[in-house]
Image (cartoon, rainbow, N blue to C red; front, side, top):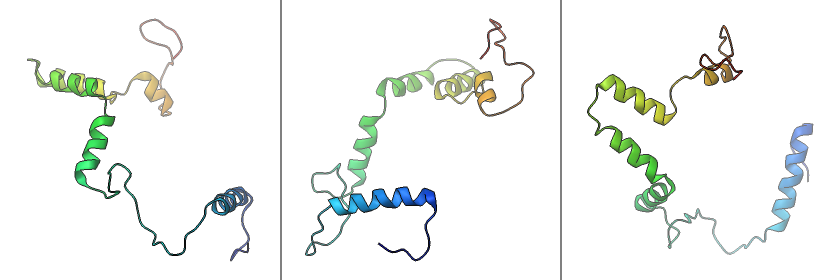
Length: 115
């Protein structure tokens, strides 16, 4: 196969794999290309089928926990903090270290072990 430009070294591996993948597939000339939504029996994308895919792929126990959280009688600040903790959105020391934020120490403030 010829390309319009010389390929980079890192591209040549991808192109070799592409050629192997294309050669394996059997193309049928009389069929028109089309997108297929595999979550529906008729291979047609519907909002309903997308909702079902998302609905069944989400951890329902986690959703029930979040819903129950808002039923608790507590001050909004506490509820918001609890919600952020459940969603994993609180910047813990370990997360700040992973993001490259410079901290005075990398030891746990409770047990003095390295994070």
